[in-house]
Length: 472
Image (cartoon, rainbow, N blue to C red):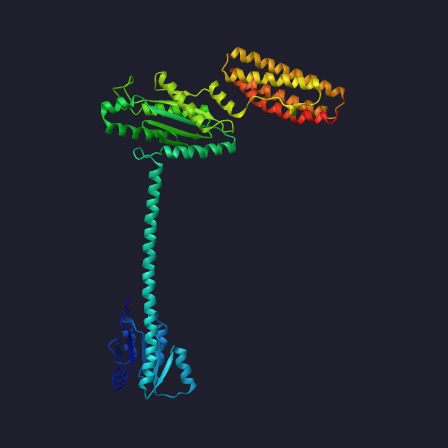
């Protein structure tokens, strides 16, 4: 790291003094400049940079004190060290005046060369260090700028990599990897907010034929146009258009119910058809899509996989029914049975169910047996008429048991009989609500009731019924 040669300005109105000082300080590593007046010195300092000024105090027109005062008033010269070279009085008033106008030291005539060189060397070293610091500061600043540039390039590269890893290379919309991440995130949000989420799966009709007739380049361009149309149609900020794979696309619609999702799907279908992309290999003269829609309200009893499965089945149905249409998923009994099997099991009678009251225990046994019978019919996908008959028998016997138990508690004067009867009433209200919601599908009603009853029986018998036995 090289430092430029320092310059010293010698200011004196007498030529012999200038020559003498210059001779004393002559050095290949020092650049010496002379000025024979204060005015000339100021003029030179504006043009050059000096590490030190050696200046006579007594000069005509403008003495050293005046020059020093003017130097301190200019930005370029205010920090140049000044050593006064003088033969005038060493009295304190003169010394103080020099310091007041900006001098940092005095050298008195006649000049001692050792003292002169020693003092000059100190300031030359300070100047050298100053220059080194400036060079280092510049290098550091350049390094910082370089690092900032590299950082910006890395951030841009990371952004690009992130985009490439989350977006489809052909169409520019989100890819399958993003679909898996987003649908899980939005599913959890909807679960927390108790809201619905819907997805649309869509497939380009007869796309293989399109590629065979028009070529893969045209096929790629077709997919790009379809992706762009889907993205524009799914207009809510929370909607996500995804290339699901090949010629299949998906749309994730958080906080959207089935009816709203169907409207989006139909608009996508119509917008793609209106593109008017010729397709000689289709029964319809332009490119069309088939769509399957599924809505779900996230809970512990259903799953993302089930929702996607239902949307896929709806898409398959749309294709089977002639393509170029949207189909909404139907919650089928087989789907519910799969969920039911994950959440409930046959109830096995054991001594923890026994209250010690034989009539009540016998009724509990019958109730559990009838519950298990309904479970078996549903698992075997028995005929609806048999499921309905068994469900009716189960509910009739449950309500009969409630009446018998309430009469018994009245007889023994159980002090919490009203609270116990209230639990029975709440059960009836819940069952009636389930029957009302699923009145068109008795199998789904039966499964909902069975799922609830399976847990309710265990809790009611083991907790509430056991409570009154303590008071009898």
